[in-house]
Image (cartoon, rainbow, N blue to C red):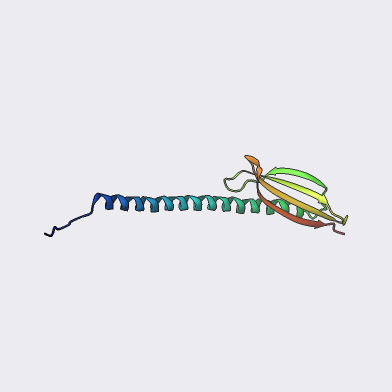
Length: 123
């Protein structure tokens, strides 16, 4: 005797729902990771621009910079950042090393960017 089988069993439907939910959960996690990565990259890019601006502020006057440390706000778009510019001597007395570190203004332990340049004494 043959019986006609129409539709799916409850077990088949439940297995399909589990598979779909696992795929959706993995997609949500991947999407969240992409958003975090994009935000991190955006902050690093903006911090790099702030560091380059701080270096330009030291180098553009074309004066031999004095040795020391200077802190200043260097916001970009909607992100508050702090630039710490350190001018140090080098073995060559006619050269200065300029280090610019950019930190998140809310967390001074979180460095976003670091740039180094050298400035020579002009004759």
